[in-house]
Image (cartoon, rainbow, N blue to C red; front, top):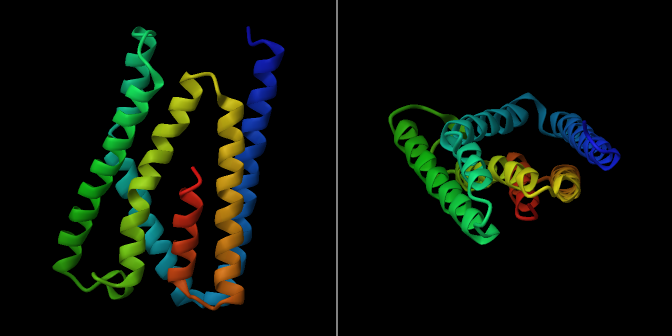
Length: 187
């Protein structure tokens, strides 16, 4: 049975996730309107590659480390955080290399190396892997309410920066991806 405090944490996490979805929807509406079909397509294609790469790169390593932490409770946070950070950036870097090699052989338009959009997507990949690991790490350490605040802040910053970059500064698809990267730095 979950204690009353546990339900509050679940509710906070649900609100943070729902807010993140609403921030994403607002970003989608504004960027689609300002960038048009081609610009939004470039953003969508880049984020699809990043998400696919992060999903493959994560290799469920976060779950394995959390399970290990549960069976070895005397370990320190730093050991797991450092291991997860190294794994996220190492696997993210490997995913970036795979993306570059696959891209070098074909016609990929705006995603062709070394375009700014492709570089921003490559930089975003390790942070996306880290986000998958961090959520589990916060849950394991019984800090779900902290994760809720971090998630809300990250999504809000990313949305605000993306909307500002595209609508006010007219930075195009690169601005949306740079905003996503800046938001992830707060994770």
